[in-house]
Amino acid sequence: MEIVSTIDELRQRTDDARCDGQIVGFVPTMGFLHAGHASLMSAARASSDVVVLSIFVNPLQFAADEDLSTYPRDLERDSALAEAHGVDLLFTPAVEEMYPQSVISEVSVPSLASKWDGAARPSHFTGMATVVAKLFSIVGPCQAFFGEKDFQQLRIVTRMVSDLSFPVKVVGCPIVREDDGLAMSSRNIYLKPAERTAAVVLRLALDVGLALIVDGERDPGRVIYAMESVIHNELLAELDYATIVDVETLDVPTVLAGEVRLLIAAQVGRPRLIDNDGLVVV
Image (cartoon, rainbow, N blue to C red; front, side, top):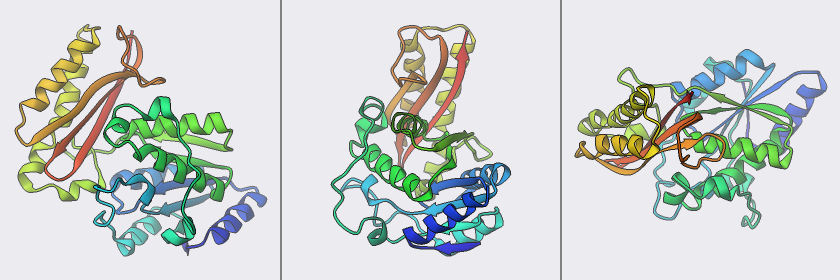
């Protein structure tokens, strides 16, 4: 594995690979890697000739009151995990490399980004889309692998790529969970023991919603109320939102039909946790 830290270096390596007829697979991350990230690396390795992993804690995604300065970091551990999962190029730019001057150009997808997580974190998705667009520009034509855990992010990136004609194929990969169902996240490290036990309530709420739909419920309001009730019964969890949306628009449908996604977010102790699951309603 080669570690590169400048834009010019990475661009040259990926250009060379494509000149040799190789397919580039790209996994963008903010580091503190876990098994969920490992699944993305493995997916990239299985379908690409050259695998690029980026580790960059993007300041544009953090509001003033969020955890940028304390976001977990462990580059030595991350490097070992990346090499073990077949990464060829590890891109670890400094903030000054990515943003040598104040950023005044932004990428936004407002109709998808203004709701749900975007309502709670108004600047988050613009910061995310901006850095992902920049990374796509640096890496060039590639397959890009994103986890489905942040389903809203995945939809925004997919639509951005389509609207702006990026030469990128976005590949969504399944959520990786702990044995008790908790979706893996770098922020899970913040959970105290009692909070860690309580955090499973997000998965439980999704299961209740899914079961109602499987049993024939087609009123989204009733499904949402059932999920909300599960979260409200857990004293250590503070609900942000529970909803069910059309996968294309991220709007709540009038009647459940077609492919839908149940989304949920809650504060459990220090971290704000998100989860989701989906099904096709016939």
